[in-house]
Image 1 (cartoon, rainbow, N blue to C red):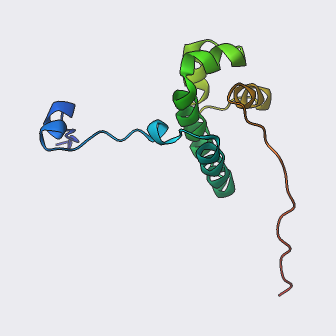
Image 2: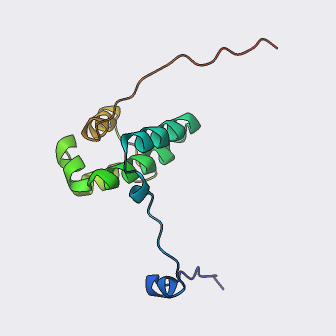
Amino acid sequence: MTKRKITPAPAALEALGVQPFDLADYLDSDEAITEYLSQVLADGDADELLRALGHIAKAKGMTRVAREAGLGRESLYKTLAPGAKPRFDTIQRILAALGLRLSVEADKPRSAA
C-alpha cells in the first residue's frame, strides 16, 4: 500500500489561523532581493538559484519580467523550474529584466595546512 501525503486545504489552514507563506511577499526592496540572491549564490545550488530567481520574478511581476527578458510567460516558468538547464544568456536576460547583474569577487585566501 502506498502512503499518500495529505495536504490540508487552504480554507482549513485559514480556519486554524495559518496564513500561506509566499517568499515573494518579503522581497519588497532591492536590499532584500540582493541579500537573498547573494546567499543563494554562496550556497552554489543550481536548482535553488532557479527557485530564487522565480521568487524574485514573482515579486517583480512574472509577465513584466518575461516580456523584458524576451520570453513568453510560460517559458519563464519552465526556465526557472528546478531541474531546468537554462542557457547562461537566458539567465543573463532574466537578471537584466529583474534589474540585477552578476559580479565576481576574489575568494578569501585559504590558509596553508
